[in-house]
Length: 223
Length: 223
Image (cartoon, rainbow over all chains, first blue to last red; front, top):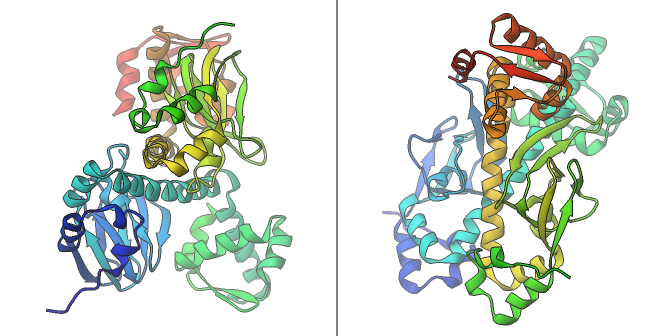
């Protein structure tokens, strides 16, 4: 059996506040696993995957409506911690998210019951868990504001479809700075929204421009 | 000067983990204030009101778009703690909310700088703050799902049932304009939906409000 590397656990701010026994318990209940792209790691309330630490790859967290609509809440990358997959550990978190891999992933999973026990006994673990949740809260608020207020997704989609039609090309040779100016918004807003579209597999970003790779999906934003 | 009652501070889970000096510091930097209905207590990023504890009355937290649209995130009632008005204290919270009184209120405010200092020195205070934030995270996710996923009929039904329960009356004294603002939608949308409910014999509309006439039918929309 391959020896596992638990160095990441030692970077958690609560690590030095655990007893030797607790540190060992945590290591013994952390396992490394590989997942293919598009794998559903955490499935709402049906089970509690536990705390995830991304060694390699990236994840997408989303909510699902009854009729199957998805809203992407945020993405997590190498070195990030996914805490909402351990929602069962956090009394104050009463909603469910779904978490999928978006690339082949190597992930450490800290068992939910162990995390629960540690958080009950050790205030540093509890504080860490809720602090991680607050980080995601900020991400979700950003996504919510984009979707509800700005319609920035729709506005950017309209702009890209129009430009593409105008140039008769899927490649739009405009910098994000220029796009922002045309759209009357800030470069940072365009930049984050482009990143979101890239993440959704709708466009690719290249030096000095944007390439539409999934026109159908892009046009779905126009409604 | 009226003697202030700080009993609520002693109910906070971190209280017994504070030194006598810290307890006194907290008391000295907590003030009681009265606000009229409709008063804007916390105004996004412009200032940091601090942690609010509601002695009497209720508050509404919302976000505001650039063009002035409001989305209600949640309401807080007697005995509730408002932590997002102390967002400046929480590094992991990077968004801004607005908080208004919805009735005449008596509110204790714990000064933000003091809360910040205590949270830095005392992990129990930090854990409390983030745990409170996680509670609000759950509220916001609920609101988000209402807005994004649910049909307007269901949303209006939920709103009317909730308001009716809150006021212990079948008459809801809110204009369609106000209802729209609370629901984070346009007045026209509410207006059409109310007209639909009137047509169905579920509600009656009167100047300045709505009367529920068929509660059973209204509640059938909640499923």
